Image 1: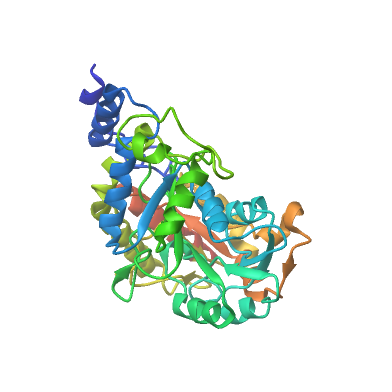
Image 2 (image 1 turned 90 degrees about the horizontal axis):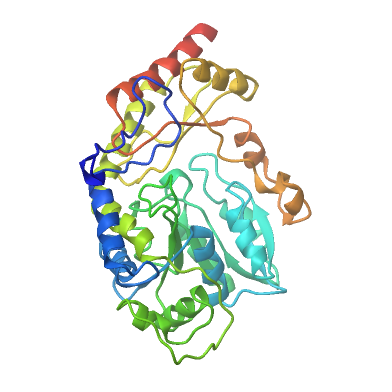
Length: 391
């Protein structure tokens, strides 16, 4: 059978387990991928440039620029370097996140300082962040958890007061809007992730969005070994044979092959987001009012949801996850707080009562693009059966 004659992989199992994540890869993605292979230029090239242009168009960027990378972590690393972060500096970010951000900060030679989050949106607590600001503080990295926007205006006000850079972790929030504009279209630096489980994927990948034209050139050098003029030619599927290396750099570039998958996905991003919003609102309607259960959001009009998380009584979480598993529904936990990891145990931090409470309660339920009705029903019924049996 020809590759393109295969049926698309279903977004979720109908008879087996319902996984937490299930990337949707259809015939359109396979076609983009085979077309990219047929071109014969497998490294960073014209399709990488096309993906950057489509990201900029989708986000509605004006006088802002996109630089794609091989991962979201790489994107943050070079964004920090472009912002001048280095040894002796300190960057404030919540402990409630995946450790990638904290590792990227330490990779610059800077230190991490960790703050608390708010109960309602699980986003950065600006008062907690403010308590950490000192002479070594150079930047704040807030997260839009699950695609729900944090109180970003407060973050920018604090940063402006102290002369700090803001590098928004928008890895969960591709397509989320704040005051009618998409995250990434205003403010300071942003970074996104396109890894296998994000709203759109390029198998693995990420990007930085910057408002500074000079930073674009530095970001382009940083992602490709510090080479001075390779990007322009590679965007034409060519190489420079007379070049200079003018700065430090890394092999962080996004290939044509990976970008081709990203192009296929961004063409369908509105469809993916609409489906995810519908599932989240369905969940919240079904679960709101269950004893001991707390939903994060009821209305998702401004949210591009990456994950759907519930908060359940801490003493019942393990039993709840086991109950779901026995009914063929997988669940996850986002996150293990970074200050509990051995490598970051000595990092400076504020008291984090909300973080300490939330991380014992939070459970991530299955959420996929184009999720089947049967999968949604299985999740709803499984959650209900646990709390009704425990009532």
